[in-house]
Image (cartoon, rainbow, N blue to C red; front, side):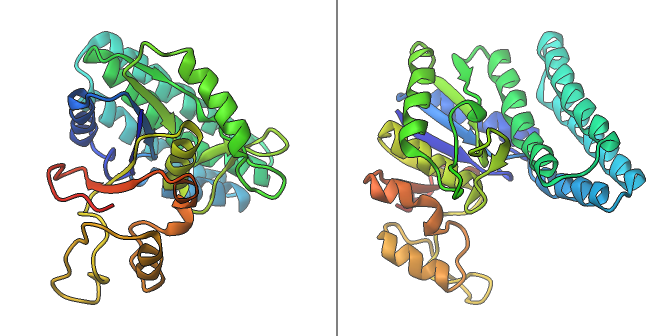
Length: 286
């Protein structure tokens, strides 16, 4: 089984989400798909949390309403079947009902983590609706049921492996397994997040836990370049890099993939490949 991670820009538009599904349909190997939140969502959720923390409920409500309308437009364009559209709308309503309810609750750090988790929960559930619509064999594996960190905020690979293996075994007949990047539970059982590297870190941890054949990180550019394209003209993607070389590029500003987020793959000798969602046939960096 391979692990395929898609970031916010890769799922940020309905046509891109459909494109991911088409990539999965071409796969001959079962895939565990890790999704980020739709692009722009996490920033909006951070803003909502900040408004609530500042007791500016009016601004928080405005941001919630604007974001909800964006999701309504998104699923309307994504889904053609009335059945799957209604299912997706109910999902959107459920999560935004939660956000509206928290406007009446006193702000806390734990609450802010609950707010941030809504993005990945929404993207994976909406994508699952689309997979259902096109008849793909899939299952949604909730990250909050297997991804955990200890009291030092370090992931527990052994526990992750045990819980995730159980979930995979329960869905052996499914070709595509979908889960959330970034989010987890902490040592107190509360909703939390992985902080460094976000969804890339999730993908790497999952790949290590299941001994995946490969960990593919799909972005909107052709992998890691030989220099920072924001500073140097005419950079080119590098086809193959060691972890040490990737670390050096990251140190000098190449932020496409930080080695700290993929150390579990390095530790367990899982190959990591960077691919371009928009140009899947482009050379793969690994």
